[in-house]
View 1 (tube, rainbow, N blue to C red):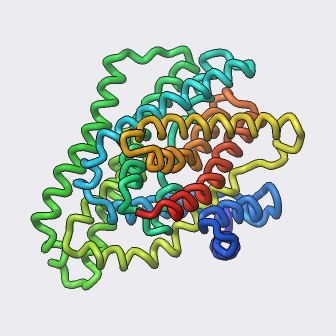
View 2: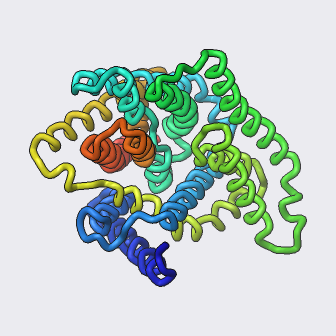
View 3: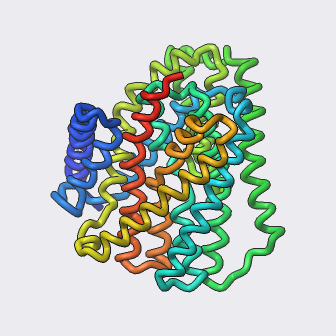
Length: 385
């Protein structure tokens, strides 16, 4: 267990590195998130070794991304998501199928048996909503139709990715999951999202006055933050990522008349906490496993597969919005970020992946997270609403 002063030093290094990285990136006309992830690569074990991944830092990173998606939800109305529901569903489904198929074909062609190939493919599937959401927020683009499609698709994407991961994990131990059991898991996850979104927004829009009932002038913020943490936890109990519950909490809070005040009050929290998520994502890469030409060629190939497969799925799913908007949606769905890292960690722990395969998948996840923001930002600037 790290000593208290060691933890404080790590916090200091991560936070300062994030600010320096973001500043350099923004001066180079890149989104700040790119600099924060790059800063994590620099101060992490692969280069300077100033910061080692630890439970304390991972907890802060998790809180950071939960608050980020809560703030994104605050700027998103349920009615806006409903209007793009059909496109979001198509993007979410195709954005899972295409990467899963291409990822499993590559893995099998690389020598994995089919059971392990499907596990590898699971790392290609789930979009990291946190990274795209940060870029959209930085550019003030959360009200665009494409942004709503991306956020809606990310929820669907997460549900399907969770199901797929459960299936391929069971296959590694030779288990078979009955279709009825899978159907129950799917219905529980979908039901949770729908009930919370519909009932929560309706209740909050009709009775937001009770947020100001306590004497504390910050009571509206305190209550909705409690809602955020509670729904983030509840989300994990249904097999979903905590950020889905946080996003739903923000969407519920967006129906209150205190919405603008809440947006303003959450900014200091975001400034403090979200850098930990992006820097810690960067620290996960193991450059020593990639220090040869063969590994770099393989990394380039799987990164290309990851980018092209999500781009195709997102583009085809959003074609009803027009080609330019479909391209923006496709690009926005590309980042894997922490989701790929989680799958890679599970694969390493289960003995499915070697350290080299683990490093390749983590590096692929981080590369998609770093490549997407500048491309997405450029597209959004060239195509203003």
